[in-house]
Image (cartoon, rainbow, N blue to C red; front, side, top):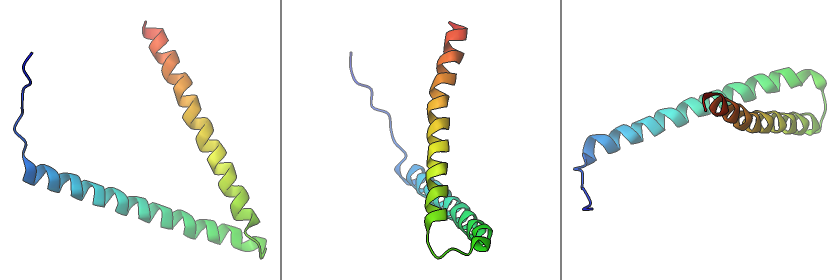
Length: 84
């Protein structure tokens, strides 16, 4: 079977991709800054000189995100099994 080559639009497609990535990372940076600012304000009342509170909060968030990620696999399998 012969290979079919499709013409590519190099100019506009590359610019659209690049601007989309810039917007994505800009929104991500703003969100992370917002979270860091409010987290620092919330943890200000603990008055601890160590970073233990930040470390424990980060561990808890990683565990929660890991659980949601794995739980998504199970939900997807159940949804597909229902259709089949």
